Length: 637
Image 1 (cartoon, rainbow, N blue to C red):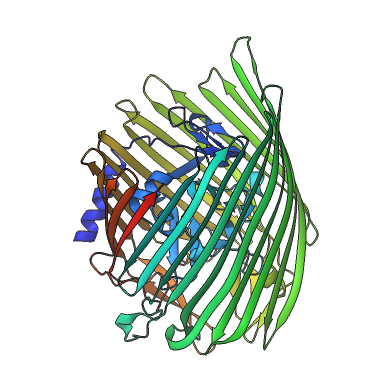
Image 2 (image 1 turned 60 degrees about the vertical axis):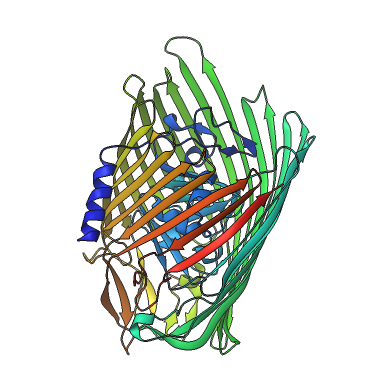
């Protein structure tokens, strides 16, 4: 009854009210004032006013992350409409993020312009080790986006933008600890001196954890986790119109785990460790009073993952991605009637992916290269109607060339605070190197695989009330995928027919009182593969609620977070490696957080995660995080 009440309440809220949250976006390294109109970067690859965006996009700000005290990006994404998160057990376990029913490797993940998808892990990014410190904002763009971003963007794009140094040099640090010997801490120094700005930080997280194999199934061995991450970001304004940016991020992690032979995990001395590095160098040149922009960049990602048994490595993946890109945009306005604004964008990208695997039973070292050309035109009419058309041509050294496109439209009614929007796009997802060439004792790659082909559209309405203190966002989406690649027996094949996914996304935020904000989201997803079977690990119903209350002249705040995840299907394998469908029950997570500023430079805080100690599984047999209590302190100088 409680779950039913929660779900219906959140859905009701989402059909009634929402509010426009103030943000402080960073666009190409420049901070945009929160008093100005909200800017979205990901939707069109260039800074675009939110009212001119025809796609469905959600922005999570640094303020929201701090209020909710989340430590992992994946946990922050649980509140985004259309997004499903599946963690295979405890902290450090593989964490998949799916958008609108797409596969995890059909979601492109960017961090300051660096693609994080791992070529050695099915071109998917594992969110298990991505901490939130120093993140300024997260933009989640939903729907097929291959016309802008190429393969891996069939479901959408998650763009993570970190903050940059500004103002006088500042030192920030935090430390926290709690149950299960959980501890975390970090420090950063940032600032701006003349034309040079900088941010350098380090952070760590460790815990004794819970059992990877579900404790309520009789398994009790704790599986711990450790994460150390270092980050640096430098900017140099060489001229008034020329800027250079450099960013680097490294992570070293180690986690204990349990073995699984296909029918569920069991207590054992297994584990995983690895290293990750992401880096980018970029130059930005503005001409003609900023109307003609040029960006030239180079990025590199390196991901190492070792799987262990009794402390010895059994399997190792190494994925490398190198990318060179150039983008130019030219904008102008025509004074004649009707009042028109124009923006033309061209981009060229060349990418090299390499995957290396090594084990006692197989190994391979394969690479693939791809060049993409992007063209986009944005038209604004009387600052009310906005139309965008994008096209991309990809040349691939393994598959035939492919062309994808995207069309969007948005129309605003200023008098009523209403925005109508719609988008249509096509997508392409290339087979992964493992699907093509990988092998294990029970699997052999298929070099004859064809790319997956997608098309999708959505329509939506955003309506604001009470001077933007309430805003409703409602979207219907419909997506189709042909030639879906799926494991079959001991290899992978393209499925004949079409996979279908459609659904509804509702979002609410409200700030009816000065010191109280509310955000809620609900997603209904209906997905099936070409044979009519329900798609795995895609709950039909997902909902979230977040309420924040500030008091004592904003020196104290309380935050209540609720996440509902509905029933979903999963699969295990029998002794002959045939898939067997299983059901995962729904669950409700309640998190309570609070903080108090002792002085202008010091704050104490605490949180209770999974307050009701809910027992749940997001992957069959893999346990979850039980009730956890944390207290901590933060200082700024």
